[in-house]
Image (tube, rainbow, N blue to C red; front, side):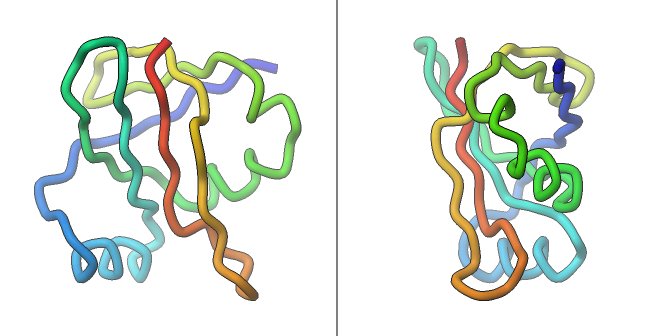
Length: 95
């Protein structure tokens, strides 16, 4: 299965900004690696929440579209809420 994720760069960083994103149905994320600078992103929460349930999402090379530019990434790590059905954060590593 092929995954294409739509993301946008985010300017507001920190705990408060991440809480506001989550409250709005978005998910804070970061993409790093391949000798480039790390970029903070926001994604749609529900898309990631349903994708995380599939095993191939964790092992596949994903297409991440950041403001129109496509990059190939893999899931490096993600954090789930302890008891809510909510993804708190996801990290991507460039391939």
